[in-house]
Amino acid sequence: MLGQHLNAVTPARWWIALSVFLVSLGSYYFYNIGLYVFQILGLLLVLPFFRINDLRCGGLKFHLLTVFFFYSFGSGALFALFSGSNGFAISKLVLPLFFILWSAFCAVVFGNQKRNFHWALHKIIWIHVIVFIVQFVWFLISGDLIDFIEPITGEEQRALGGAYELAFLPGVLRATGLYNEPGTYSTWMMILFLLFRKIGKDLDLPNRYQFLEIFVIATVFLSFSTFGFVFASMYVVGMLCERKRNLISVLLVIGVLLPFVYFAYDIVDQKLALGANDSGLGFRTQVLDLYFSNLSPLRLAFGLGMFSDFFMHADAELVFQDVGLWFVMVFSVGVVGIVPLVLFLVLGMPRNITSLSLVLILLLSKFALTYAIVWIVLFSFVEFGKGPRGKGLL
Image 1 (spheres, helix red, strand yellow):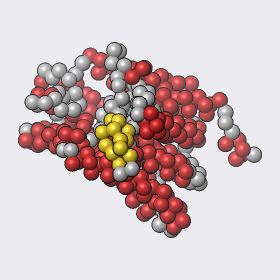
Image 2: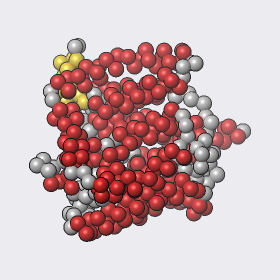
Image 3: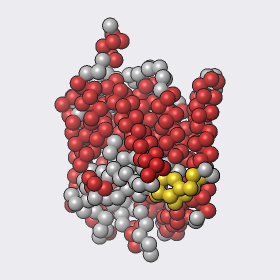
Image 4: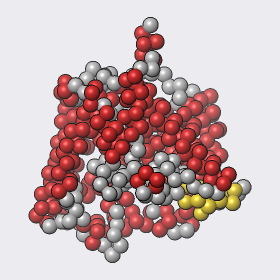
């Protein structure tokens, strides 16, 4: 009876699933009002399940993340105020409110709704995978791109159709699914799937999702994103280490994925042959060169500030976050400001391949510190409410 109750599809599960789906729409940014409307709506939908006591159970790990956020925000605001930076606008003052909203959302989905969150993630990941496949196959059949973002936000998806070719296909689409770029799709899918696996481990649920696993990794390879290729390869290596005793499972997954690995490698090789500007590696190198060529002890210790427009003064305007979240955080808050986060990661993170992969991919991603998904991943290592406790040291 208990098992039937836990597996029952209740209205709460569908409500959480709708919330998670809206939060996963990280590319639907409405420039006319400057907000991720769907994400905010998704975060608000879980508030009826919120209990203030869930936050009080967060413990030291929750306090470390809170200190890290408010130090990042406070120091960034002060740096911008005294340096005259144009990077800080009045609209940034709502960020502490968003942090409270992110905290409340995580207290619900990692607390009293953790099983429903796991169920919802499974459904939402399948939706994203199916949309990606439809977009990819439709281009092969018709040569036309189905843009899932432009009719809603006005921004066109940056999916490249026919720019690359395989031995048996004259032109392929670098599909994006419900995201604006192939690399964004890859990053979101890897993080959502690893988060799904992590929660399953927290709840001691059996891993019966090899079918979903194959489709997620295959579509990440088929996005032909350089970072997607790296992230998916990292996952496969981690899986080999984790399942070395389950030879049949390993051979099945590797056997199915091998053709996709080959296709992805072929496209990435073509991208690199076209030059750094196409692969995106050139932009990241420029950001690093500009930062280290202007490095000083003060900047190393305290950073440039969360809202710095330092990189906007380059000959070509560089996107700060293109260099990766970890470097962005170090550049923003310096060695002093990053201490609470490092303590959180070292002392509070479970020592397993799934958790390590999740954090590593997050830190390598191009997400900004102000993205909800960043804090959702970090808060996944905090024990809210009466949920199962992890195996960290705190």
